[in-house]
Image (cartoon, rainbow, N blue to C red):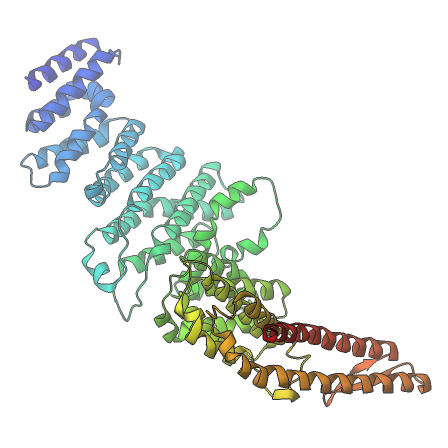
Length: 571
């Protein structure tokens, strides 16, 4: 029945000619042709399609047969497979490339979840053939095809282990390899256009448009799938399709004139708002640039083509945004304590501390602090506890230690909230951490000015605990530990304050006397056995007054804590 209907519509259209076919003719050809292929009559359909008398009809209507043909070809074991493949190849030669492109992309986008990879792999070569038929005006069509293909590939699970990549159960690796073969002639055409542009002094609009579409493709590939891929070193997996895919993507970028150094520094070099800046953001997504940096500096892909003239500080400055982005992708409180056993998980925060305290670039010091806090937020509660302990032991910087103490207070505050309690920042677990916080490194002789940040945050924490955790609740254990804190921290701090104030008051008195007798306008000052830079007497007095004001500030907080403790003892 379907074969008769197909023969009838073909005979009727042969008589019409000149492409004056009616809508009914298109509909009947599509319905009858689909039914014939589905019913196993593909051999008869092939004879009709290749008949020279039907060439005009097939040119106009043949692309409507793509759907049923793809359906049969995906089955693979179907006995009509050779006939359907012959029909498809003939349609690719005869039909309008624009209509074929639309029809093929429809099949890609409508692929069932279980057949995504098979559909993509099946249609890549036909798509390539159709696009090459478009000649010089194909850039936008290439971009549309690449976008559709990557969109479907993004639905496939990404292999995470060596075994998963080798097994390639969901065929993402096969798709990536096949996609490289698909894009290769277009990348080569873009390279030739760029070379010819250098030779002739001008780049054609067509070449520039193709270059832009390939740039978008590379940026999308860096985002998905490469941002989620755990690449394996050649020693672990000698032939890694995903590593090859990453290498080829970076090669395409270089081939179309996007140097890796320019891409890495893109965020620094494009801070000013310029016309079309939104388009720039689309062409150079932050996620893609972060992925590029990861491939370059972690896996050393294409590292040989990266200039060695950049200073480590500049490279760090380029990468801080990328580090921040990678951390932001991790769910808060999700990293377990076992990760701290890995050297890299603790060496990275230590290096961040060096950036925060030693880097000459203010912007990087600020960014380093933000990245450190973001890192802390990602650890689970036990990991935070162990991390704080390690940082208090190893940072050797009062500002960093003060920042850690502030984080400890935030965790205690969270633990004290209803239904938010956790054993690590309450009771028996908290007390060892508090002892680490509430101590003076050198007892009463501790340099209070040098350790100001830590001392002020520690006192603030102690005051908070005494006010927030009532004695009869004692959830943190602060009240049972209080007598030790008074003996081991508050009393030595009081002695140190008195000693420091007496010393600086004496220095202040001597400086006032000396300034009256001084013949020169510039003097030197020694504090803590260290000679300070030459200063005028007025500058010396200002420094000494500032130090005494700092001691008064510490003393006022300490006195407030003593008042809280005394009020507790009153009936």
